[in-house]
Structures are given as structure tokens and as C-alpha cells.
Image (tube, rainbow, N blue to C red):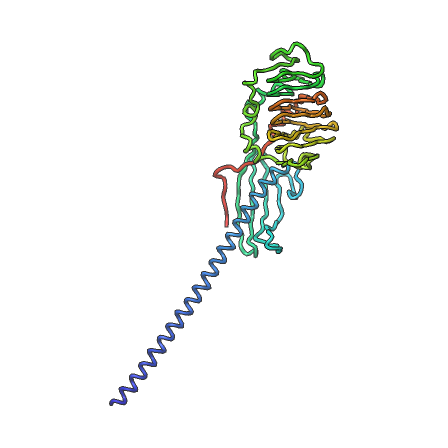
Length: 359
């Protein structure tokens, strides 16, 4: 009887141990399955995040491109255009990692321009392995930087807060109120003696305290204008920057800082697509227009401008927040077409609350 109970105790131990091993095995298998599942979930979340960020990059790139290329005359990378849409083909998002090119995703963008003032951008993003996709739709609207009443201030083809040195015979006001709107002295060649205020075909001067051209013309401050413009840093001499020449392929808003900008024998803007060229000389440098360069649009100079008696033509208006010296070979023409079309110069911005995504 004693031996029988001992044998029974051994059998119970074997059964208990086997049961425990089975349970441990099941737990291990469950843990492994859970780990695999979590890895898959994390991988899928990572892929989804890649696809989402890729789609967002497509939206950002499209907005940048719209500020760099004209909507009605796109060049690479805006291609395959039809009557109503523009499409940016599948584009990899890459960066350099110690000499190796790493791809983190892809985007494809379609821009619906049925309403040119209110675009719909659809960006399809893919993960790096192209296993996950995400779509973002963003509405954008066109905004120009000018005040609604800006042209109540632009009443002459040449406006200056300081002194101007010009040739009166080369300033053609056409339908403007006056030839020169100056807060300083008007001098140079062929300047009439009767500089009367607000008399058509005459020059006139204004109290300098009332001359605040930036705030009267632009609805945005200088930093905001820089943000929406095609910027040129001319710390070293800039001669005929490609971004300004042939403006059918570039933004018509240009902001040049650090001076030393030289335009020689070129045309910037056109009557139908006038340019807004802002040259910041407040920290030094100079602007030189020569070789019969022509600017169709608005030229806004911040600081004193010495054109060294070079020849050039501004069709539209020149606004100088400072003095103009040696400008007797400059021609200033008011152009009604430029004045009408300048309001079409601006930038596309996101419409708040219009963003949506589809994963």
C-alpha cells in the first residue's frame, strides 16, 4: 500500500510538471504572437506616418512651387498640365545620410485650378516601401500683398520720400495725377519751375511727414513680404539673377536684400504679368539698372538709390523710400495695363479649416 501511494505521487508530479510545461509553452507562444502583432502594428503605424508626412510634404512642395512658377505657364517640376489640373508626378523624398541617399517616402500631387483664385491641392503620399498610403486635400486661395486703397497713393510714375534727380522729359504720367510725388526736392534736367500740388501734368511735392509709402501700398509687413517673395541675397554682386529674368517661369514677387543688384540689358515682367521688385538697400549696397533694362511693374527701393546715370525704363511705378541720385537717364512711364494687372501678383495661402486627410 505504501509503495502504491509512492507510485501515485510520482505520477501526479509528472502530470503537474507536464501541465506546467504546456502552460508555459502556451504563454511563450502567446507572448511571441503578441510581440509579432505589436511589431506589425508599430511597423504599420510607422508606414502610415511615413505616408502621411509624405503627403504633407507634397502639399508644402506644391505651395512652394505655386510661389515659384506661374500657374498659367508652369515649367518643371510642374508638368503634364491639361485644361483644369496640374500634376506633380511621383516624386521621392530623399536625404543624404553620410554619403548614402535615403528615401523616406513618395508624393504625387494634383492641383485643380478650375477656379484660379481658389485651388484644390490633392497630395497622395506613400511610405518608403510603398506599402502604406495617405491622401491630403488642401484648399488654397490667392492673396495679393497690396492694400485695397493702394492706388489712391500711387498717383505718379515716380514716388519718393526724399530728393530726386531726374530728367523731366523722361517722366510720363499719362493718366496719373502728377509726374513726381516727392517729399523732398525735385532736381535735374528739364524740371518745370511751377511744381504745383495735384495739378495734372505737373510735378508736386509733399510734406515728408506724410510720406509713408510702405504702409500705404502694402497690407503686409516686410517680413511677411519676404516670406511670400522669391528672395535674392546679394551680399556679393548679383548680376541679372535668373529668378528675375523671364518672369513667366518664376514668381512675380521679388525681394532682394543686401544690395549690389545689377540688371543689364534685360526685361523683368510684362504688361500682362507685371513684376513687383523690392530692393532693400537699408543696410548698404546699390541698385544699378543699365543697358536699357526694362522693368514692367512696381519697383520699390528701400534706402538711397544712386543709378550712376545709367539708362533704364520702369513701366508702372517706382517708389523710393529715400533719395534718388544720378537718375537723369531713367525713364518712368505709367502703363495702364501694368496698373490693372499688378493686382494679380501675389501668393497662394492655405484656407483655414479646409484641410482633410484620407488614410
